[in-house]
Length: 320
Image (tube, rainbow, N blue to C red; front, top):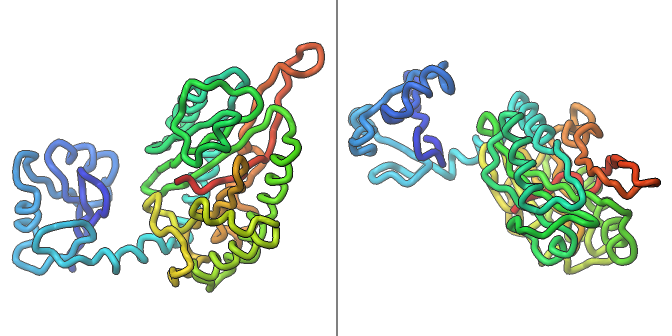
């Protein structure tokens, strides 16, 4: 059964796979979204649970969402969902690459920046259930900044949870109009190698989330920020849910090589980001393609000329 949808569930029997939905959604599901499944519909005003039982007959029923009288199989279904096959890994990488495209301009409000990101997502057939944005000082103040009317002057952080074809990618970008300096630069320079080490060392095939988390703690300490990991969770598994598992020292779940991972080195005001270690075997992930970096347009160049900066700041980030 679909673990989240309020409109339709996947109904699997010994004989076939079906989409079970009401008569409002059935025509669209049948003709556009799930034409390769048999769609079983019920009247929208009927009791859904009773209609579902009628559809399957008297056989025992298991579900990965709350359903009276059904066996809870969510624990058994979840690993099947977050362990991605090669096709899903490829599509997941492309979702992340497409979600990472966009632009901001100095003087733009956080709300305008978030609206631009939403529009860019829809143009790429991405649904964005979460959009966050912060400008300048709000970046260091809030890990999950709801867009306000503050205007971008020196830098901006934008975050999106983007879904297409059921797969979620969670992307963060930090863009700078001017080069960071002082403490901000020190933290940014420490953050990026932590992300690189998370990709290259912590998420090798066969390692669990607990292994990766222990490495993350060590990387922070070696960079001079031993307690930074306590301020925010450091990622986990993603895929057919925006959040499957948030990693912590107790999680033995894995293998990290077959799942979509969200990694988030984050110092106050600076963020490393998300990468998908499972894409390693095919070389450089589309998530990191230079053409996908956020860009910022500025008129602070010489003689008032407009300059366009492409900055790989922030990479991809664990969202929330």
